[in-house]
Image (cartoon, rainbow, N blue to C red; front, side, top):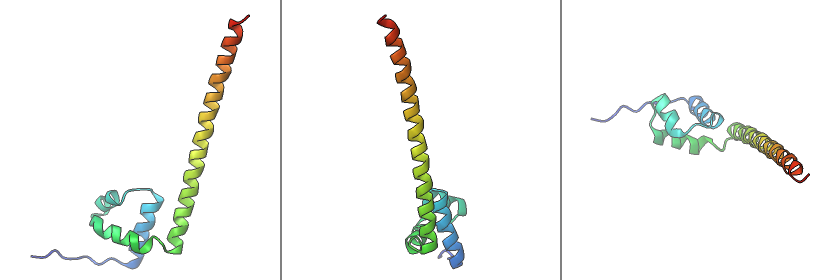
Length: 96
């Protein structure tokens, strides 16, 4: 007995690929959510990932990721700076 293969609209496939990229979810996770074979989704990713509208989605996501990383780096540096200021005051009092 063979499994019945489902047919999906091209638009659905593109939206699914865009969803995977925008939400930064794994193919496996989305496959479970949509009850679609993981290999099928990998095929869609390979086919549609390079399309201009989907590439644009990736660009925005990577820019958002970069902004988040930079904000985190700023917070870390501000925290380090505060610690160094406290240490400077501590050692300045010690030498008087």
